[in-house]
Image (cartoon, rainbow, N blue to C red):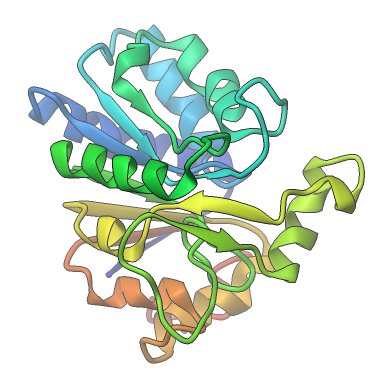
Length: 243
C-alpha cells in the first residue's frame, strides 16, 4: 500500500488525474470505477482540465460504485446528477459508456444482477474510492460480513447523518442504496482511495494500521496488491511518520 500526503485537495486531485491519464492512455478501452461525495471532486476537476488540454475520454468506460434507492436520476442529490455536474457534462465521455446503478428499478434485485454483468463485461482498470467516517467503501457498511456482489444496503445512521449536509433535512436522506460489493472493488487492477480532513483521520488509521475486519470495511484494501491512499495532512495525522 502506497500513501501520498498532499498539502491540499487541489494538488491531490491533480495527482489522481495523472494516475488516471496513465491508465487511459495505456488501454484501448480503459475502465474507471468512480465514486461520488466530496473527496473525488478535486480529481474530477483535474480530469476535466486534462480533457480541455487534449485528453480524449471518448473510449473510456465508467462504472460508478453506488446510487441511492428512491431518487430519480434528475434529483439534484442523485449520484447520476452528481456525475453529470462534476464530470460527464464537461468531457467527451459517451453516455452509452457510463454506468450507474438504477435506484428506481421496479425489480431492484434484478438491477443488482444486471450491474454485476456490466462489471463482468468491463473489468475495472482503476477504481477511485472515498471512505465513510465509519469505514465504508462504496456503501459497503460495517457488518458481520461483507457481501461480494452488488446488493441493496440499509445505510447506517452515521452515514445518513454524514450525508445530511447535502439535503435540506436529515429526513430527506434516503435510507437505502444499491452498492457494488467488495469483490468488484478488489478485482480492480489498481485502487486509489481519497480522504481529506481531520474527521477522516481516525478511520484512515484504523483501515491502514488495524487488522482486516468487517466492521472497518476499508481495511479489506490491505489485501489488494496495488492500492494508493491519497490524503491531506489532516486525514494522515494519525498515521506514523514512517508513512
